Image (cartoon, rainbow, N blue to C red):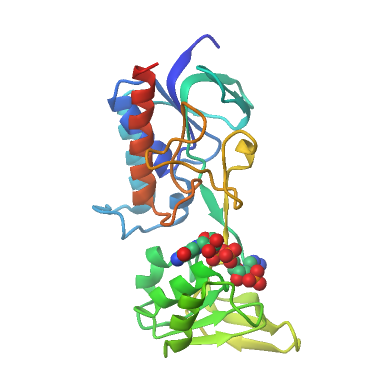
Length: 306
Ligand code: NAP
């Protein structure tokens, strides 16, 4: 364990891969640690129309190209899951299931996952009518009927966005008032394309030969069951940043998102953050890559000045 990397990136999604490319090109001795599959959340979608220059062959090929491009510039890739760490001091130590790694700087790029609605067939029909990202998928539902599950800012913001594409948007909320801010609520109430179903949860997404055929609903107050015919269902019930590992080690907000300045610096010198795990508003591949590029550039400045 005598080797000390200039830059260790935890997470091989778009943020981590972009950071690796910038690290490699800056002639930094760069290591990417990924516990499972490269690509993160992006790898769960097959098409990506909102990434400039997105290529035929879809997301899988795009991610592989990102990874091999970083490798060509010297970034090293190891599959391991980090379970503990020491981030203070000039040399940081990461403890993985398979070994220990030391670096002068660390970039946390562990991503986030959408919180699941928890209804039957949700996982099975993901990408087949069920989505967690209107910015990514709204276009596929042009002139179709869609549902939005949730009552927070994301659900209502995205419901409004979806009205630009869908024929009708039905918001399904488990209570009789929204959590979202009042301004967005007023816009939702005033929008003719939006219907609201209160006090109701989704029990099941109907599987119609491998695609969504509608939703089975249940009113929580009356117990009444009903069906809603939709061709799409967008679930916005919050998201979970993959930051548990860093609790007590770097500063986070109350939702567990890691705080940074605009240069991706955390409160710990030499520790940077990039992508969906950090506090930000737009969680997309393009913003993750931008974060990764900034974090790696700052990491290079940090190494040069220490
Ligand atoms: P959120 O504020 O936590 O709202 C989650 C919503 O989903 C709530 O309405 C909640 O219902 C509902 N919900 C949770 N679990 C559910 C389940 N299993 N089944 C059905 N419904 C469920 O999450 P968010 O909307 O993603 O926002 C996250 C944070 O980002 C918030 O602080 C938000 O203000 C912020 N944000 C801000 C903006 C903006 O300012 N434009 C945009 C997006 C997000 P209950 O209300 O009954 O708990």
